[in-house]
Length: 348
Image 1 (cartoon, rainbow, N blue to C red):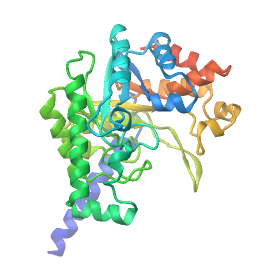
Image 2 (image 1 turned 90 degrees about the horizontal axis):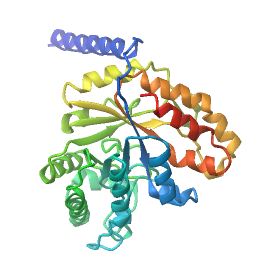
Image 3 (image 1 turned 90 degrees about the vertical axis):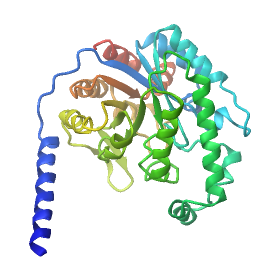
Image 4 (image 1 turned 45 degrees about the vertical axis):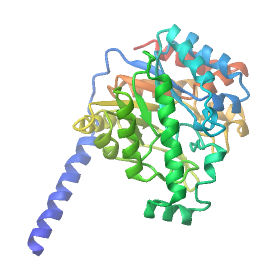
């Protein structure tokens, strides 16, 4: 008995070591021939920066030369009153993108891009537990009127979104949640994994387009998403901030992402970068950090390096993070990052 257990442990350790060498040993990867460069756009973040969000969006479409936009369709914005939907702002965004031949990757669900990530409207929040201890019970028990009512309302919202937009030709796929299997990031309680899987199947039943699930590129394996979705989207962060250690640079070669993608494609046909970090990490918020300090954290030279790093992963569809911020900086008299991004995107 002990002998068999020992063999299993040794075999598992050997597999981990082999995979570790495969992922972490640098190799040269041929850059993709024709990268689809895109950005993530969040209306509420543009408003947080004090921007005219429509002007910002049009500047991104018309000046940066991008070919795709990832947009979170925020539940609190489209259904402020239960059962009454207003898609006008998102219709406008999709119309403007279609005029320019730009594709859309909509993200739908409860947890979507940009802090605080949780996008439940106030009328639905009343069904959610008030503290983390209650959330644990909410997740563990998996039943109860509060949970059921919230989930029914979320499914009704997702159905309304897909039915409204599914005839649009420039929608290429549906992203379900943002890092839905990761419960430790965002001002959000975790989502039960079984519910996330139900969401993906629900979306598939409404529209045959591919489903996308996103993961942390550095801090998760991506396997949970690969098992359920058609496309795995990964973040790519080279430098992060920790309240304990301050700024930390990941010592990962570009081939780490391409090889991770190759492994995940054993289950999910496609692997893309949905969040390329091209925005200064401001622990207390961009508006609370002097612009000179922001530009030190992400200088034009650093942005060029990050774009080239992403190119060297060999991934052929990449969504940059930070376009609203670049435009805000440009209007403040610091156009360098905007110009650097435009130049970088032109090199496909």
